[in-house]
Image (cartoon, rainbow, N blue to C red; front, side, top):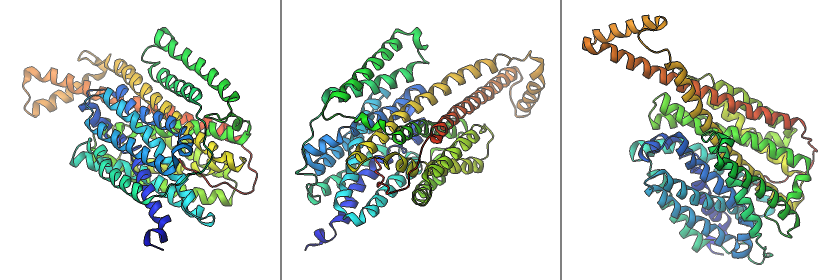
Length: 515
């Protein structure tokens, strides 16, 4: 027996985790660089959100085709295809000259991620013997949680010392090495299994449904909702495509989504919990780098370092949450996680211009611990009542719902931030003028300070007004972030309502499948 044969399962784990780590790293490494990208791609907060949303949405859509691809071209070739798409799109992202190009290339990259991540888990499940599959899923889960944890700090370091474009270029050497090893080392896993027929009509209807949903939730506020013919059209397309998709999936022999899964009470409730949890999760991930860099004016690298402790604690909390979910009622662990996320998201709403760095680190770390206590028990509660051949579909649906809800949460966070910033700025600036008696003492003190610093007497009034207006605008942005986090805190509160109706039946638990 050769060295490769003897250690094949560990070599395979290394190869597939290279691709998984690289793909999942890109879910958070981008967030920390968004303020830099906004300047170079000549876009604003509303535009830059699509860099995140397109990736999440495309990843969700790509996941639904993995089962069919694996049955047709085997699991090895499916993994290789996903790598090729992801590597190519990463190179294109690094070359993007405007926000439209970046959005398109991130969409393609997301499709690659949607293929690589679930098929990696499937390959690991196949190469490890039955009595070591828990170990295999542990390896997978640890890598899958550590990659997003490392993203903010690595992204900050790369952006500070090279440029934000290198957060994409760094995927090329890693991806090419993983591709080379995949071609020459991996066996042709998945051959000989039953060939799935692809529900093309269902897939297109589902893609249309998701895309129209994201578009009208993202653009609705900007275009004044139903006052816009475009929004009315998007809502109509969403409703029609949703109805047609449901009807199609109920009658087709091999559907893209097995809707009969939703007859399971715990599964349906867990999906709803995952939806509202994910809206909080991805909305908060989107907001924090903007708060740190655009309002607090921290450098990119320092912002990444501030976020790192919390992200690392998420990895640890996921492991602890999994152990606790095996020993105790997972409903209680899930409740603890959601309550922590609610409380500490609300704590984030107290952040302002003067919040100390250690306070940010501490509160965000506790929010991340709550996050880690959600994934394992939610997976156990959702999948425990499903038969073996339906667990994979159930796991896929949980991850698709997570990504789509994350896109919606990001769009809501963006809309609230932009609109509230405009509202608060207009309201606060209304009374900013030298003739306002209430703020006259402040004008006097600033004018005296400028005069002492050598300002020209003829320009003191204009400079004073400019400083006051600048501070007032920053204050308006601070209030806008507070509003956003209050919105984000409301989502896990809704999830708590659905958790109440979950029922746990002790028994054999399925292995969580993290996509």
